Image (cartoon, one colour):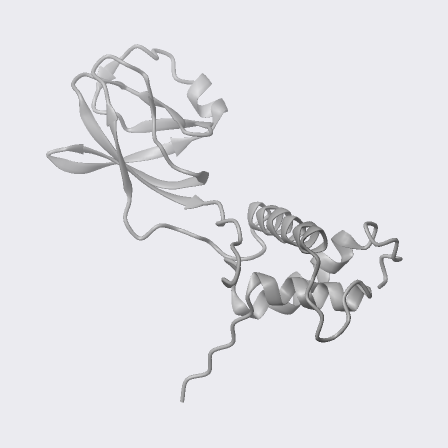
Length: 184
């Protein structure tokens, strides 16, 4: 037997609005009211995910990007929350350690060339590699990505076990908008 429990963004918003007293049973939410709750849902999901409270959202296929010969930095087009694992393709997949700014600063000769074995994530989409690639190659990155924004009539990008907590947190977040005490 399979049990599936899914609540859409709209259903969560309606529940929050009813609990706030801004929507009567059977009524349809005003667009402006629903938009306040939708924004609160998206903002809370991003915050919870950044704090590591929900779960890891890791793409099943590593993203590949190009490294140019003689260039220390490279950028990848991805919504990286933080990198997990990297490899450089040089016949085989050579593991690349993702290092801290302190570790990168401790490298004495940052102009040394070779097959990269270390990378500093600069944030966003930029990485600095050491040694500097001697020839053009490809890097593969496994990373945790940001959660997707919610969309109408779709379930939020959150584990089903977190739905009640999400609803309660969003209700707390919008309480000021409706002039309700946070305990509401």
